[in-house]
Amino acid sequence: MALLLLFVLLCGVADFTRSLSITTPDQMIEKAKGETAYLPCKFTVGSEDQGPLDIEWLLSPADNQKVDQVIILYSGDKIYDDYYQDLKGRVHFTSSDLQAGDASINVTNLQLSDIGTYQCKVKKAPGVANKKIQLTVLVKPSSTKCYIDGSEEIGSDFKLKCESKEGSLPLRYEWQKLSDSRKLPTSWLPEMTSPVITVKNASTEYSGTYSCTVQNRVGSDQCLLRLDVVPPSNRAGTIAGAVIGTLLALVLIGLIMFCCHKKRREEKYEKEVQHDIREDVPPPKSRTSTARSYIGSNHSSLGSMSPSNMEGYSKTQYNQVPSEDFERAPQSPTLPPAKCCKLCILKT
View 1 (tube, rainbow, N blue to C red):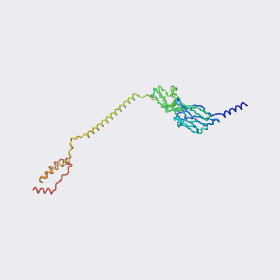
View 2 (spheres, helix red, strand yellow):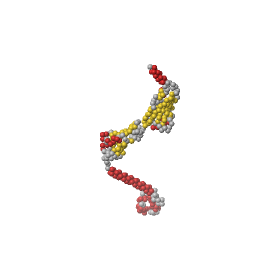
View 3 (cartoon, rainbow, N blue to C red):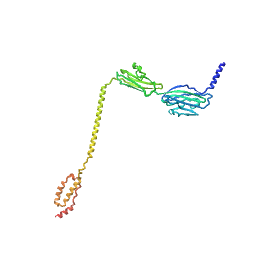
View 4 (spheres, rainbow, N blue to C red):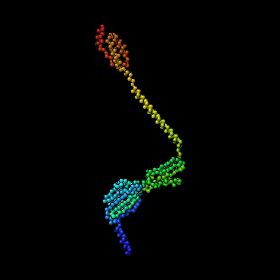
């Protein structure tokens, strides 16, 4: 009985004199790129720990070429989270009351550069404690593509391939035939967990829809593939048709170019002819001036003629004037009757 009482007393004294300690164990955390990582750090303080509370998180990069970096700090009832530029704006304390014993943090929008060892240090004089957490950032498989490498003809050999553009290793593959899986050849079974399935001596029974799933520890991605095994095509006819089509296209292009060139040459020749005017050739005379000069000469001769032969003159001479030169000439003036009679009296 005395021994039991002594044991209880010793435990009470030990509990009473217990100093600051972090209750969260060391651990390893794996997260996918772009996700949020929760890094726990919970602590208790002893009765003798009366100093101010200081909390500090440090990062030891995975490449071991950089010194430890302070990423967030609590001191003097203030939070400082702009120490490390690569994590600026992405690291926060999860608790609004750090004095309550929770110094855990969240790291948001994880990047591959965030991989490393994170250390939580808590100090409340005279007590000091720290814990380490290993953070690994992985990339989920994404942009997975399924395709056929070769000709999908009966009796031919080809390959079914499955590739992911991104994804942290190791990657696991799983092929499935979504339609009529009983027709799946037994020779394919060893390759149903590999990125490539080799098909030999293909038959129509292989036709169908296939799926390929790519997985790693943080995620998965899938693609679909439609396989249609068809009879061999007439390759010689296909090649001949392609050659003939190409030649016809070249001939048509040549004809179009020839016609365009010919038309341009004709337009250029017409412009040169229109602007080629000889300066040494005088301009043609006006028909109106010719008719007027001819009529004027006839009028001048009327004054010396007697009234007896004026009638004959007017009938013969005026009819001799070319009609084409007289079309635009003004109408010849007729003499007033009084003047004609006066002229006849003077002559007699």
